Image 1: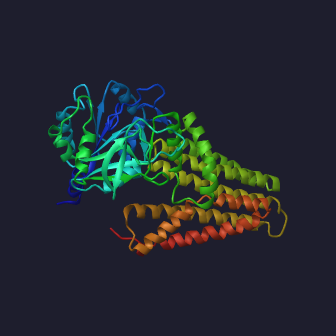
Image 2 (image 1 turned 180 degrees about the vertical axis):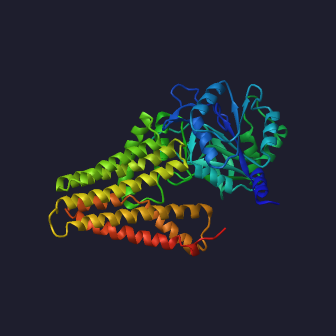
Image 3 (image 1 turned 135 degrees about the vertical axis):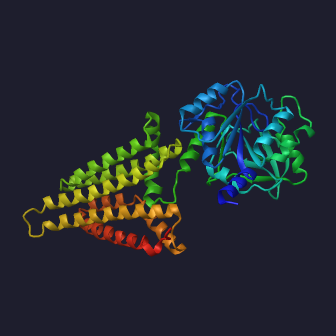
Amino acid sequence: MSERLIQQEADVQGLSTAILLPSTGVFGDPIGRAIGEAGPLTGVVGIGLFPRAVLTLQRAGIRQLIVLAGAEEDQLKQALSKGPRVTIPVRWMPIREFPLDDPCTWDSLAAESRGFTLVASVSGVFSRALIEQLRREVQDGQAMVVTHNSSDREQPPSVHGVRVKVQADRLTALVPGRYDDGAPRAAELVVLPASFMNVAGQVPLEAGRLPIRRWLERAAVDGHVRVVPSEPAGACWYQEVRTPADVRAAEKKLFNSLKSDLEGFVDRYFNRRLSRWFTRLFLAVGLTPNAVTLLATLIGLASAVGFSGGTYEASVVAALLFQLAAVIDCCDGEVARLTFTESPFGAWLDIAMDNVVHMAIFAGIAVGLYTTRVGQEQAWVPLALGAAAVLGNALSFALVERAQKVKTAGGWATPVHAAWSDFMLKNVASRDFSVVVLVFALLGMLDWFLWMAAVGSLVFAGIMLWVVRPTATIRA
């Protein structure tokens, strides 16, 4: 059997189908019916809860989506068509034709999914990593219930949903959500084996009620329901969205999730704290990630022009402009991830423009130092150093491009070569460089910085040349 057929079979038997409930909760609570309560189109960082759920599931590897929609179906379709492209098939099943309390509805859904099905409402925001974790951990005959804890201890107990009694990661009981007894709360995310839905007719159903809770209580008796806690401050998080306060909490978690393993010290503790304010502004005015990249580039080039002035004051102002460009350079990726508009071209443009700005900064500093030394015996030295720094940066960019292509193709000869590549790519993505420029500008020692830039860029290019040497890669 070919590798592709094996993967397709694994997807069928695993968790590749999701059912979304826009107008009701997984455990039967209505969504958006009370005045002031969030509904399926309530915006969280500019995207409605329903489109955000669809796009998150798509990014997490869900291959098929079924929407059990009520009267809001046309609005949901319109909202989905206006945002980023949805590439997975979406089947719309009106609940007037497929009642949620009808066993035949769930038999039809079981036939669609075959392996496992993720059932979710749109009364919450969840991370891609949480869905990926559920897809990895499915087990034959086992259901899964995701739990979460309220992040705001001052809020009164919610009347929605249920709480979960757990023993050794297994569900033992479901209790009403209004009881604030410290038990974790069930999130609106449940993974069901198709076999559970196939026996819908064997379990007595209440008129107008979803059968999911009955299935889980029945399976919990035999220990067949696993409880998966979400991480309040980790990658696998879940945030209920019912009130305006919940919307703010969800947006905070989305911004916190933008942290990257490639960030340097300055990015993590300075740039990211400022960039979030700019990101909110760019989202409000509707700037695209590529437009933000070009804006950061223009500010960086203006900084290079300032360095060419040669005076201390001009250099300090230019260094501050360069730091501002570094902050805004964080925003393009934040806007892209928050709005699901990442693209290979956008990633390439970001790296390419970073290198253009860096080379312009080297050239600007070199010209500025030269203008203050015209007529002196070694006035040419800054120009030579600037040329060396620009050359080293250009070579490094070309070699980094080559390393990324090899990494994407999985073509490293040994794990050691792969580790060296990851280490170098992590360092080339760091924006700590902008603070170094600012420090040297404040100290009036840009000539020393230019020496470091020239030597450092050439050494980096040399190491990258060694990393991507022919013997380090696997030939096709």
